[in-house]
Image (cartoon, rainbow, N blue to C red; front, top):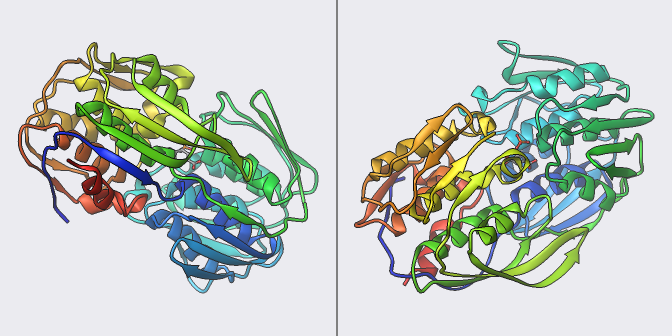
Length: 426
Ligand code: S3P
């Protein structure tokens, strides 16, 4: 699908965002292995989160869908069944990596794979710890999907993550649910802690202190009724759009503001963005609030070290804002961007250049000078949802309409994106 985005003068209005992708995955998986019937509200409509539900169904879990209300009839820790065929994680790295932790403990072998993009993403990072716990794993060329996970009885481990990755941390913690004893994961930098929070909600014993997380094996997980907070990574596109267009003001209700995810707010505020957070409250362990953003000049800045890791998914749209900022944006320590749904350093640079924006690319990041103007161009998502949405935002500030090739990729995390964007455009 090609989407034509017209420039807008301003964005105005109030929106409520669909459920967070990261939280939806975790609720989908944990409710399936809890005892009893869970009700999940505001579950993401994104294709990725539905890949997770489809995998759980293929493993014998009954799931009923009523829009964004999902009922999951949990089968307990020992209730999953061997699937009839291989599991399809679609485009979803979270599904294949986190679910492999659960598959590693099953008394059967499962093959799990996905689309072309997923088939290029590295799986060695989950294969190493799961093999240490006692599972047998085989992958294409030793490291790419599809992977065959032959499960069995697992040993607890004490594992230091070589890369800061919440998916890998979650994979080991989920496997740790099935091992007798205490599994420990140590992370080099704090990553999103939705798994730790969700595990506690479902009744697991999890402790976390200064980057060391422990989980007690064989807990009784019990069904819950949970509301997924609005997706902060989806909010990022509207925040940047409002900052780009003079006269804009957007209120976003019920956004998940978990402190391990909200570095974006700090980074934008540090550069002078006018963003206010109101009605902060706690919902099922997650911090939620309303965010109000008004157009303001953004200075730009340097993104590096742990800050880069905490807002890795927001970098494509920040690159767009960087080009319009006063002093530009520099990104370092972001080599992980090269192994996302696309090589996001390459796909962001390609689209910026098509719009006449200068960018200097490095192996682990880039520099985008500020005070640049966006030229209308033919753009391409390259099949990456965040690239599709980031460049739809850039197109709002271009000097004419832009066409975005494969814009439908946005539906991986945010099928409602274009409708919401049009609803706010003035
Ligand atoms: C995610 C973790 C991050 C992020 C991804 C979702 C999660 O990936 O980029 O979109 O839900 O745990 P890594 O774990 O590979 O850093």
